[in-house]
Amino acid sequence: MSASALTYLSAGAALATLQFCLVFLLEANLSSAWTSYAAVTVSWLCGSILALLAPAPLPRFRLASGAGASYYLCLAMLQNHPFQDPVLYIGAITAALCGAYAGAFFRAAFAASGDVSRLFAWENDGFVLGLLFCFWGLYTHSTILLWTAPALALAVHAIAVRAWNEERDST
Image: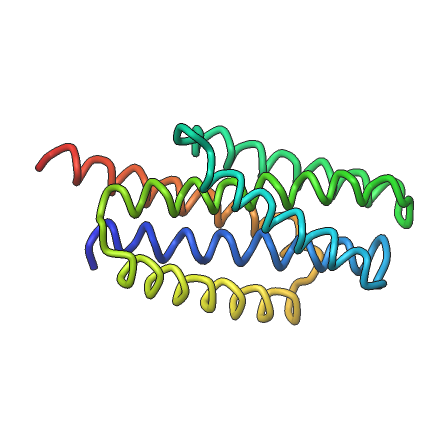
């Protein structure tokens, strides 16, 4: 498997993991009303669109770090103050940062490869694998999943991105 395919696959898995864990975290500890899901969905899409339409490419590493840090802030706040409505705003910001990372990643990956069908095929496969991993993790170790899976998924993706950058730099 090429480094680019591994990067696309790991991006899909990381995005699925962040999305799944954030939605589950908010639904279980804040509200299972449609507003929680809608806030995450709309914020994620707005972040993606803004990153795609930005006049200059956004710093992907900072966006991924911000998304991860924001997720863990939301997790910590909900652990200490469950069912507090203001936490939904942090969840929405987290989703927007995750979406912005997704948009920035797709923009950079397309610019580097020019092959959108391959990019979306591998990313989609990674997203499905990420969802399957999350469903399995939720079934077997729900609390551990929420605390470890986003960091693990982002770390694996960072390693894949580094390998891809090294492969591109060597050619």
